[in-house]
Image (tube, rainbow, N blue to C red):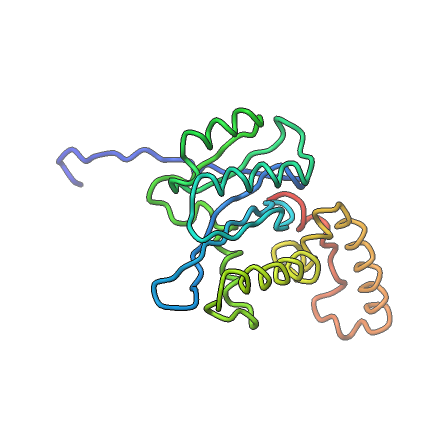
Length: 220
């Protein structure tokens, strides 16, 4: 047994945010996107709903700034008519999100803030995963010919992502279905179809009757 005194490290509990319905928690981040020439970058800001994975707001900027972050937050809140005191927005610790005027805006709008822990890369995992989906899409060009061309591309991409993309984290539903409160009804319809298939050909279901997936969607 070690006889010397050893430093005892306390057990830290990882902080977590939980959303059981849309517009309770949004995550916010931005990513750099290549422009038409070497050294030219654009910046894509995205607000993502934690429960539904729906892109509730986004904007496109030539350079990141607190003004862009403020404008996106205010416009998205107005668009979705989120009641004061009901929303938490999770951010990383970029200067665009911790600036003093951004803090004042949160206080004015009565929106709670959450931040990633210092030097912890996976505290904004949902936004990072979304950016990976964005950049690994087969139609993603890698670099854009200009600011307007990129804007047109992302308008089309986010419309597809919200309405057509089947997301593995929400039982292969689309973000729009979950965000608009149709998840339970849609899964019930899926279950009816699966039960009919099982009744007609039970030998195809080697693991038994198909399970109900309602509990897999709500509560992240």
